[in-house]
Image 1 (cartoon, helix red, strand yellow):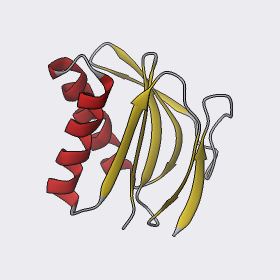
Image 2 (cartoon, rainbow, N blue to C red):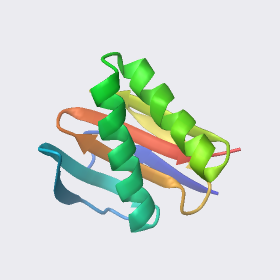
Image 3 (cartoon, rainbow, N blue to C red):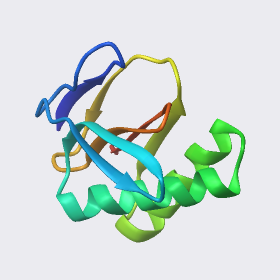
Length: 111
């Protein structure tokens, strides 16, 4: 298990990775990741779909969590918002923290 912090004021924890990708006209910035690239792309795609279907952040987080539980087995956790700090323990290779425009998405597997 790895421990990783997701704090919008810090420029990425863990791998200190920060990259930008143009996706569906949304600005995507991966702030920190301990996850293979294909799974990161899948997380971004699912998050875009979740934001298109839901306007409440809690519902977006629930959508992403349930999709990852279905596709990659339980237990995934997801936090979505504009202003939060975190420090989580996650399974190795199962953590991503990124921004879609102005909204942060923290997704990790633990348990």
